[in-house]
Length: 256
Image 1 (cartoon, rainbow, N blue to C red):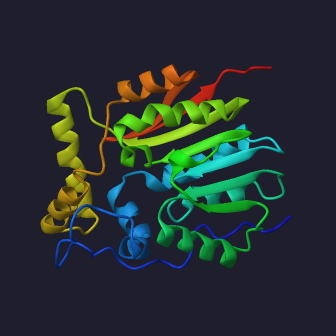
Image 2: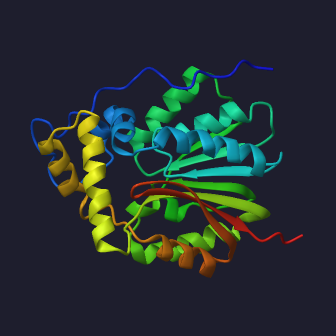
C-alpha cells in the first residue's frame, strides 16, 4: 500500500490582501486570492480543518468502487486531495470543479507534487452550474453554494440529486444566518474575535467584510433544509457547527 500523502503542501503566502489597501470591487477568486487562500480560509473559517478531514472520512463510508466523487467549487482541492489520500487503491474517480483558473492551477500543481494518479482525479475548469453530475456517490460543496446566486441554487440541488447513485450523499458546508437577530449578531461579533485572534486587524476584517457583502449571500439552516427536501433528499443532518459556520450531510433515498 502507498504511504499516506503529507496532510498539507508547502504553506502559501500569508493573507495580507486587505492590510495595506482594499482590493478593488467585490471579492473574486483571482491570482492574489489563490496565492493566499490556504492561510485565508484557515484564519477565517473556524473548524475548516475538521470539516476537510471529516469529508474524507465520510467519503470512505459512502463511495463504493466504480462511482464518482464531485468536489464542486474545489478551490485548491483540500477536500479532493484528502479524499484521494483516504481512498488510495479504491476505484473511485474524483471530479474537482472550479470556475477559477488560478485555483485550479494550484490544485493541479499540488496533485502532481503529491503523485495523485491522473485517472483518480480529474480537474475541470467549469462553472458548477454547467457541470453534468453522473454516477455520483458523493457530492461536496464546501463553502461554495453561498457564492451562487440564490435563484440558481434550487436547480443546482435538483441536478445534483438526479445525478447521484441510489445511496448517494452530499456534504454541504456553508456560512449561515441565524433566525434570531440577537444571536446572529453575537455569533458575528465572536467570529470577528476569532479573526482578531488569528492575526487579522480591524481594518482587514472591515475591508474583507465589505468586499464579500454582495457576493457571499448566506441563508438559514431552514432554507437549506427546505431546498434539499424539495430536491428529493431523504434526510439532512447537521453534523458540524461553530458559530455561523455549519456542515450538513444530505442523503438520497435508496432506489434499489
